[in-house]
Amino acid sequence: MGLSSRHLLGLQGVPKEDIQLILDTAVSFKEILNRPIKKVPTLQGKTIVNLFFENSTRTRTSFELAERRLSADVLTFTASTSSVTKGETLKDTARNIEAMKIDMVVMRHNVAGAADFLSKVIQSNVINAGDGQHEHPTQGLLDMYSLREKFGKLEGLHVCIVGDILHSRVARSNIFGLQTMGAKVSVCGPATLIPREIEQLGVDVYHHIDDILPKVDALNVLRIQLEREAGGYFPSLREFHRFFGVTKERLEKAGKPISILHPGPINRDVELSADVADGPHSLILEQVLNGVAIRMAILYLLGTAQ
Ligand code: CP
Image 1 (cartoon, rainbow, N blue to C red):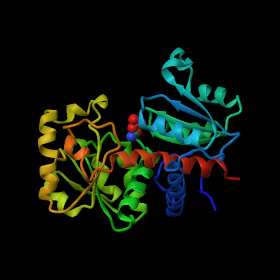
Image 2: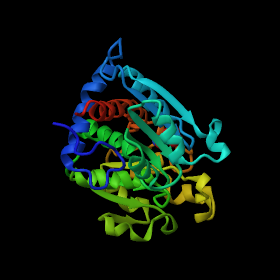
Image 3: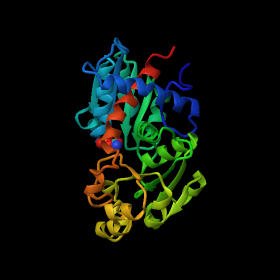
């Protein structure tokens, strides 16, 4: 039994059985991560290239750790120090690297659809590590893993994604993945940061965070993407925090514990107050650990498929 595709490009349309298989496989890899010796020989002899055309801390480190813990040979490529700066195209870059006999490519790119394009021009397995405002499937999977670990199931959970939905590939991957697994998804944020067509994806839309808090099991709080000019969509960061910031006082008023996720990096005291980010209901650092287990599971399932 394996995955139904040889690439992981997004979670839209991925069957429930595939998501279940990835989450279940990650349970075994998380157990390995908690051992004193964290390395297994599963991908010995395989070569994986990480192509990062956009900055990353968590995803890049997490993929590199996952690959090394599976004993793969790993090459990490950053666009700023490559011949991309001399005008080489994505297709030429990827095909030249592939000519050196590699097996898998993990790519982050600032253009939506870049991973899909890559999967059509090279033979290696392609894993999307975030493409523009489109999808970030491994983040969606690690978020689902963290929720399943906390609640024991995904079916019937109510998760609200808060903040800058407009620019967020994380929101899209969470919506597709969680709905496939039977969870209810709502979104909450200023009207200017909620895409117009979002209701067509089957989510409820809220513009007052205090209205949604009593109804949800978990909040996935998104970063205001200041590098994508998100700060221009509302009057000030202070005002955003006043109306949409997830604070201890707000959560206490909800009258029940609500689990807090955030994909990082956090703008502390903008979308999330520091005491909530570091508080007892925060799953944020567990998400980071789970990210390594999820990426090991995906690399294993794609890298060992016949
Ligand atoms: N969550 C996430 O994608 O973080 P990075 O941008 O640091 O990889």
